[in-house]
Image (cartoon, rainbow, N blue to C red; front, side, top):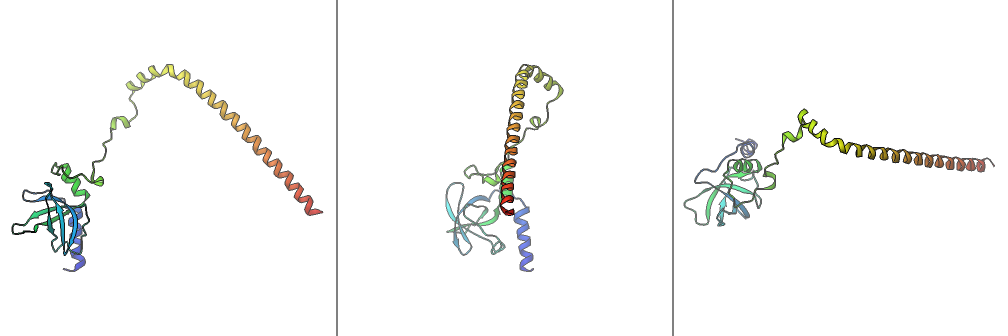
Amino acid sequence: MSIVTKRKYVEHEILNDFVLPKPPMFIARVTAPRGNNLHEAESESGERFLVSMPTKYRKHIWIRRGMYVLCEPIAEGNKVKAEIYRVLLDGNIRYIYDQGLWPSVFPLPKRAAPKPEYNIEEDFPPSASESSSKEETASGSEESSEEESETEEDTASSSEETSSEQSSGISESTATKGEDSSQKCSS
């Protein structure tokens, strides 16, 4: 299998296949890279240890500080206590959170946070029964709103008159300047 084909399979696995942690597996947060495909990770209990990256992810996936990984424990490890089973991206984190398996110790990343639910009933216009009850309560306020709209119309018409006077004044002044300049050129 070529390197490009292998990269495609790994990329598809990371982006599209969502996994849940099974009993020996656990979720850890990467705190620092240590080199040679080793990363320092922190478990739910606050314990810090080294995790190794499997060969299928090397040179295909890069891990930064603060990312979450799904780890599988290694029995014979003293310093390296687990191997990375899966790098958890936002979609997989959201899936684990929805299933109720996300550790409460770790904060949910902002991009994987639940989106606000919209109230569909508030988005629709009011029904006939709701609109008739609102009309009864709003009838007293309609009179005051009519008076306000009349005053707004008066101010709008007066501002239009002043703007037309100003524009005519500008055109007259430019016309006189134009006449003056034409007289200077002809003499």
